[in-house]
Length: 193
Image (cartoon, rainbow, N blue to C red; front, side, top):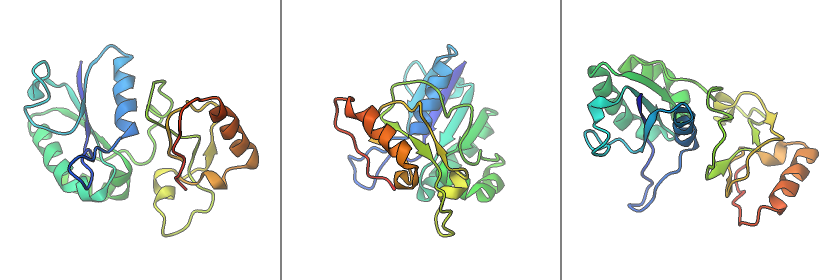
């Protein structure tokens, strides 16, 4: 199968910014492990590469991190659907705006973490040692995307740690994270939460 995994939040606020999307990489790896031909990157109709004509794609995934990227994603999804292609939508912004996205595209976005992709092995730029947050503050979106506070013992090492509130994890978990990364041998970015 030909699979296109589109990072709908690819561009940052500055021209040179590129936004990393862990979900895109995990979905792509999931399909590569199954022998599929996979394109990952931004939406560029008819320009997914010479070996990847857009209309030859069997299934499209769209992952959107930021709500301000939803209008462009909606246009792309509606174009793909007009071609009769299988389409899935996910990501934090899709979780926050699921009803709107379903109303304007006809596709119900996956809400929260997708268990098909959460533990796909791979060499990623970002890792999570925990998910969710026990505080469940009413103003915070974390509980919509990650409703259950979880601690992982088997997390892969990566240069960036994306935990939403690592300081709310158990002391034992925090010690495990320090021990595991102490021998990593690379600089890490652990500034979330």
